[in-house]
Length: 369
Ligand SMILES: *Cc1c(COP(=O)(O)O)cnc(C)c1O
Image 1 (cartoon, rainbow, N blue to C red):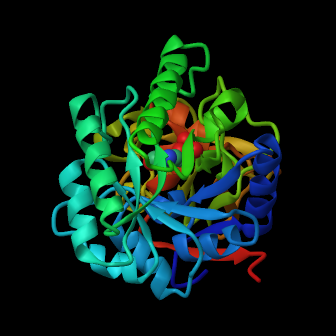
Image 2 (cartoon, helix red, strand yellow):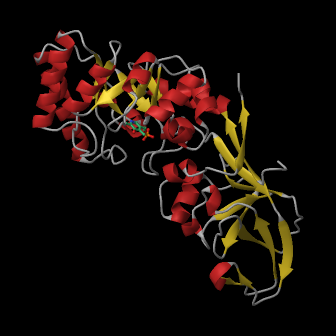
Image 3 (spheres, protein in one colour):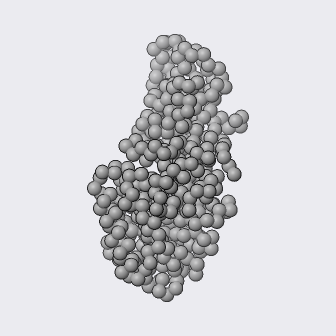
């Protein structure tokens, strides 16, 4: 920790334990570990390698993510679900990556690209994001039947995504599930074996067994973070610890103004600590004057504006020295805040707190095999 000012420690044993616990929560289904967006900021390649010890499938959003995994030696079942025209469907097929079709044109492009093409079909059951809806779904099903009958593609699955699985009592969840079941029936009626049927994300794994079908896609909970404070996942613990050391310590008098915009003024003589990470490292500036960090088993408030490279914390009258450890967030073993605490301070969700951690951190992996 000398060339890098701050460190992310990723506990892969905990990650495997989380996956195992989530598997027990969906015992009848296969498990897909979602490692998109650099494994939610945890580091895609090492996390994916650990995931293979437990999960059946990996899931990523983009072709670049899928091909990066293959280039790193990953060879297991892998689904990619977000492409644009010109996507490397030939390369993906040759790499054994399954891709997702949300439109008939997309499915035709996938079939044209390779004799090996395997595609899963995405139906929009109410999120209104990707996936086919209404007449577009009918067209996608008809195209799939035609291409498969001609031996030009293999349909290996059908899937959709919840809009509010983290609000388990919302009736929209039931409706989405019903639409999904009807879509599976559409495929069968068209003579297509639907293959793997999947709908559940982390929240649905713990709240909606009826949505588990053949496979569940676990993201946030595998990293030990609840999808929402209202959907606790007691079986898991956070995988990631974000930590650094004090880069400076100084005593300031009452009236001292801290950081850009002078948005915190000391009301007494106090000791300030300089924490050498900021929004350039993915720390949310909106947590200025609100977040806390862990220090020697206690929490210290962030004072003033969080800057690009640094932030200031209030040590009060504690004795502290340059180089003393500071934990921004972690599993809480030493009283430090959680990613959820940072999300509350920043006005966002815990997903964004970890996923934004990019750039200048060093990453240390515990439990690599
Ligand atoms: C990101 C994502 C997931 C994982 O969702 P979590 O809430 O993190 O479990 C599952 N499925 C799809 C399609 C996704 O994009």
